[in-house]
Image 1 (cartoon, rainbow, N blue to C red):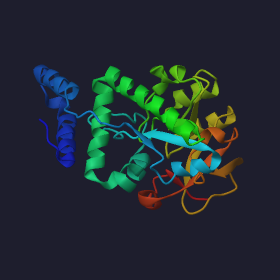
Image 2 (cartoon, one colour):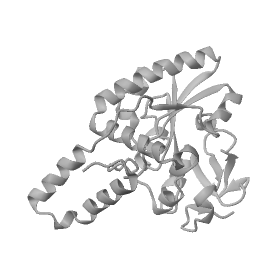
Image 3 (cartoon, rainbow, N blue to C red):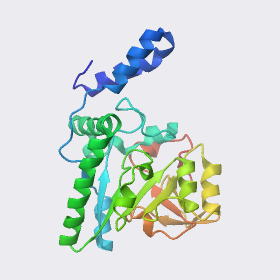
Image 4 (cartoon, helix red, strand yellow):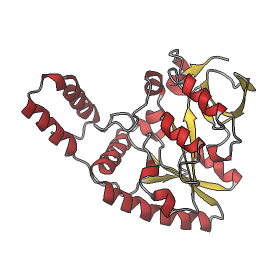
Length: 270
């Protein structure tokens, strides 16, 4: 089944998930085949270069930022946010800005399915775009940096991209504790920075990362405190360049959009 209607695709995928236990063996096999062959169109462009109110602020600090936006959680039929909490899902900025348009959402679904179902050609495409991005940054006398998890939480360190582009700084936010711990322990590529994202159900893990010398991000309801639980809070709304943050700090973000009405514990009250 394929339709351009995003809502119809999501309802269909939800139906598959809800009825998984009722399928016969042959039915489960059929479902797996369907999930492996979800239709997609290869995007002409994968990376978003400073077409974002937050990342463009980085130019004041001498950086040009490229971000890859995929369809979060299981919007594409594939879950690319394995540790997303309920609060995270509700407050997700997936539909913020240009993401509110159906064609943009469909484009992100296409990118996600391309990455999952045809990994080699996807990575070839992104390599070419990174090469072009490096040239663009040089022409603007800016330093290139890349965030591949704009609206996803994929372990990009397993693709080899960081090693291929050793002179480029990559950075991401992640809710996967093992990834953040690997970063703190120096087990990720040296040009890849990870900020662990705090939510309503991973506070223990988040403060463990802080104690070990890492950084976390946290969303506050109305204003940012100078400190939270004894740790310095910096204003992460000034720019998105998290790799510039000093160690053992909290990248504080003020709640925006749907997050303002969140009381799951994802948004912190000072």
